[in-house]
Image 1 (tube, one colour):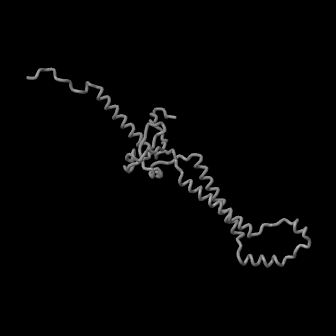
Image 2: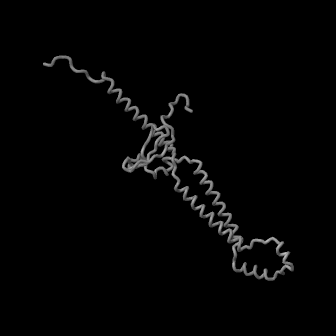
Image 3: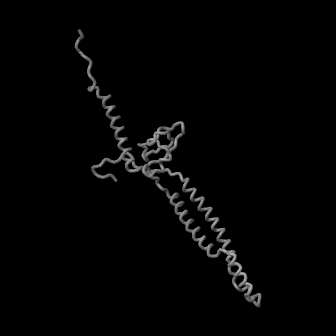
Length: 204
């Protein structure tokens, strides 16, 4: 919504990333090196070439985070919490030699059930060794998934960017300047009254 008395911007601060062939590369607006990445305004009024690494500079532009990227970030945070919790649980039941020895010794002193039926009816409790092995497997699986998710985030290719406010204003100023010069040039060419007329007096 435009503010009364103000002229609406010729293009919104929302740019799409396009890529051209290396043979069609042009000078980057920042470092002037050949660039094959193009930022095109949403309404296709403004465009310019820029080196891809500059898109990671927050003082130049900021990527617009889509839902699938946000889900990846959320998934990473959940996996990090899960791995940390599993490691805590595994540490509590981690088998040590002294602990295993004492456990085995005490276990051998326990009185065996008199009836096999009592043994079958008694619920079996997961041993620390078995629990530790299970947690270790879960840690490995979750860590592998976390590593893949982290890599997916690092390699994510954003399609939309918003320019830094100062950069955006300079693009508008550049657009207005080019438009003004073009209009002025066309007006001069069309207005023949600005050119001197041919002399009508006879020479000599």
